[in-house]
Length: 326
Image 1 (cartoon, one colour):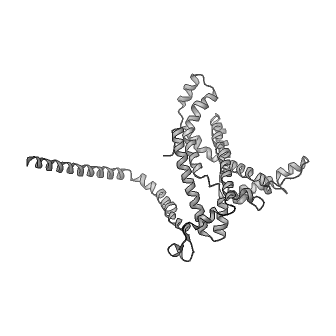
Image 2: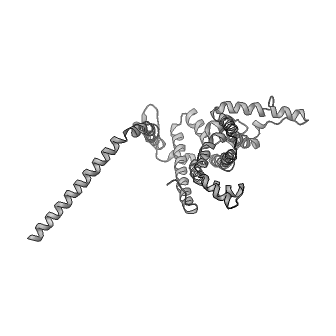
Image 3: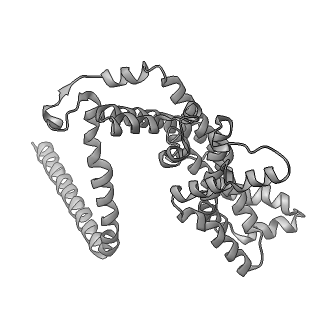
């Protein structure tokens, strides 16, 4: 009997302690939120943006499994299962679309991704502060130009009639070359213009990473007799590695997104064979053709592939370098 009473009292004490600890946690959490409420208010617009424009639109993914009718809406449109995915995969030009998309994305990773890293390292070596700021400003400016303006500049440079490059070729005795209409030049012009436009702006992240490296590391390297190259290999590059890995993983996750606006502006009937990608095909079929279900199916297909590649690349990166997104 006494043992039962002791056991009951012990359980009651434990329950009271548990309730008390829960109350303390709630009270401390409430005090923490009240003390830091300005920070959470600042965070609120960002959260609302993602909820309204990123998460709620995910509900529209059901269109990919419907024969969507704009007049019937989501609820009354007929369900067709995986019909649009089958149509996409069996499309005669599907392999060409995938190949063009992957090749352009691969070129962006190989040529465009390292460009801001190299530029940031070069800017970091400049010691004249005013000159460094001037160079940075000039390199940032192309980012603020629309792709329409960039294509106009490319046209002014490489047009077969009035392009500056062809004027020089004619002046030195060569025949003009139709750079913009020849498939063999399409990818080169596309990647090069992308590098010119975004290289300077992308250096911001890497310059911030370089600024976070402690000067004491460079001092220790110099004491040990390391020159500029050794300092880069053993101090600068390891300091940049976390930022490089994270951005590379994000790029791999968007491997099927090569930039619709840029590709669409550079495309013409003679370069469709090497330039048409999933995004431009989705625009022609879905938006211009009114096949919204096809467009949604392509978008969902890209998202699933990108997510799978991101998870895989992240696991490999964690095992190889110890760096990753999560």
